[in-house]
Image (cartoon, rainbow, N blue to C red; front, side, top):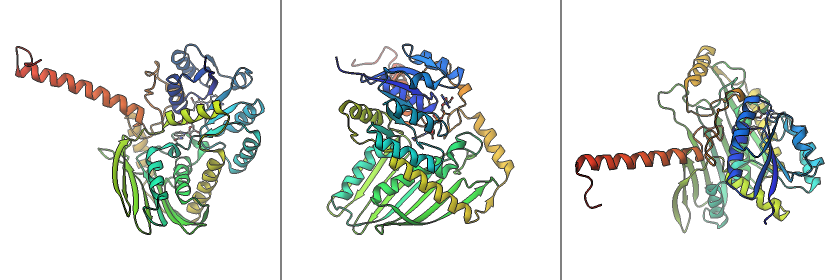
Length: 412
Ligand SMILES: NC(=O)c1ccc[n+]([C@@H]2O[C@H](COP(=O)([O-])OP(=O)(O)OC[C@H]3O[C@@H](n4cnc5c(N)ncnc54)[C@H](O)[C@@H]3O)[C@@H](O)[C@H]2O)c1
C-alpha cells in the first residue's frame, strides 16, 4: 500500500477548513488530528472528519510521534512557536502566510527552516496559479521583449477595520504581501526603491488603501495598488483585480472576477486569449505539490518561507512609508460604522468575518467548503454554485418543454 502522509491540522477556521476539505479528497493524506482553540469549531471538526482526533491543545498534535506533517492555519501570532516545535519534532510543514507577526521572528524562522532540511511550504497562492505560470512562460520565450513595467492591482469591498486578522496588519500587509510577492516574482529581482501613498478612509487610524511605486535592482519598475475600500455600500458590489506586464515589444495581462481568470498575451509572434477557472486560493494545487514534495523528499515547487518573509518585510516597509507620507483622512467614522453594520447583514460578500463561535453547525460537502478563503466568492464555492445553477436551469428547461408540450417532450 502507498504510504500516506499522516497530518495534524492546527487552526480550523476558513483556511483550515479549506485545506482539510481538499485533503479529504486526496488519498495521499490521512488527517490524524484537528486542533482549534474554540469549542464550536472543534464540534464542526469532529463532524467533518469523524476519524480524526480533535483537541484544543496544539501540544498534543505536535507531540504525536506518528505524524509526518502539520498544517498550521491559525493566525500569525500563534505560528512561530508551532513552527519551531514542529521543526524540533522533524515534522514537515504546510503553513499559512505570514509565518510570524514581525519581521525579526520571520527571519529567525527562515533560518531554522532552511537549516532543518524539512519540507516547508507557505501558502503564497498566486505562485500556484495557472495564469501566472502561462504568462511567465510567454515572457520567458522572449515574446514581449525585455520586461520593463509590472502593474498589480487588487481592490475589493473586503475586510474592514476591526473585523479580525489584527496580528497581520492593515490590508497592504495582510493581503498586499501577496501582490508584493507577485511583482517580485515577475521581476526576478529584489526591491530597490519605493514611494507609497495611502488614504485613511473613514478617518480610521490606518490607511485601508495604499498605492506604491518604485524600482527593482535590475531596473524593472512597478506599481502596486491594494485596498479594501472599493464600494462597500454600493447596491451591487464589484472589484478590480489585475496584473499588467509591459515589455519593450509586447505585453501580457490578466484580470479575474473571482470565478474565472482571463489572460491576454500580445507577443511579437503570438496573440493569445484564454479564460479558465480562477480557482481562488488553489489549495488543491498547494496540497498536491506538498504531498509530492513530502513523498519524494524534496521541494518540488512549493512557495518558500524565504519568499514569504521577503514579501512580508517589504510590504510592512511600504506600509510604513505610506504612514510617513501623511495619508489624508477622507470620510467619517459614522460611514465606517454604517459599512460594518451593513456587512453584518450580508450572507455573501468580500472577506466577511467569520468568528470561530459562528462556525457552521454542519460540515460542507467534501471539496466544497462554503467559505474557503478571505473572499467569499472562492473557486470551490463558485463551482458548487455554478453546478447548482446548471441543474436548476436544466430542470427549468424541462419544465418549459413540458409546458410547451403538455403531453410530454417530443422526440425523447
Ligand atoms: N494565503 C491566502 O490567500 C490566505 C487567505 C486568507 C487567510 N490567510 C491566512 O490564513 C490564516 C488563517 O486565516 P483564516 O481566515 O482561516 O482565519 P480564521 O480566524 O477563520 O481561522 C483561524 C482559526 O485558528 C484558530 N486558532 C487561533 N489560535 C489558535 C491556537 N493557538 N491553537 C489552535 N487554534 C487556534 C481559531 O479558533 C480559528 O478557528 C491567517 O494567517 C491568514 O492571514 C491566507
